[in-house]
Image 1 (tube, rainbow, N blue to C red):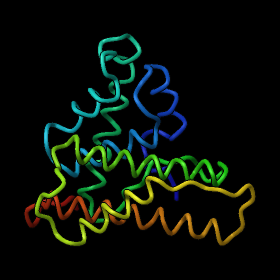
Image 2: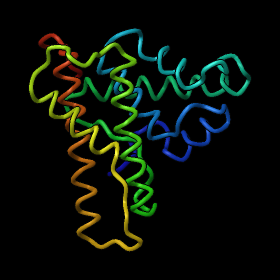
Image 3: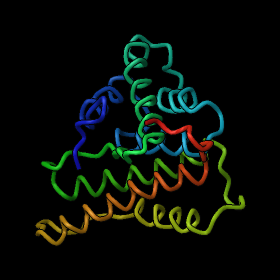
Image 4: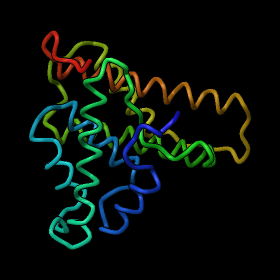
Length: 187
């Protein structure tokens, strides 16, 4: 799960958000933005910044990081519209304990679901069955907790499989909810 393609690391975004007393952490914020973009309602960047920064949008710290946050927004849009399926979740690094990475994935999925709602996607909206199934799975993942002190290779493999499922599911949801006209994808 390489995050080399992301414009900011999990730790960097976490520090930025702490500096402005933002709502939520880095994983949740990234999931939130991806959900808002998938929902396609109000312009995603402004809605996301409004939620994250709240009344602090004009503080010196908020103005300073706004450009970096917009770069992250633009990067997600680029990844969603790229045929290479290069979208990556912003999660704690592979060197972090599995319990912390599991918590980050849980927060990412919770943020994504909240982002769908903030972006205007409503429960009960007519949708393909696979979209409904993915949303239920994300809800379950958003409540996941890691209960063990020690981990083994099977735990690591299971975590990686779930991350890949979430990643590909987000790409599927984006395609289902925000289809591009034929020939509009980046080459």
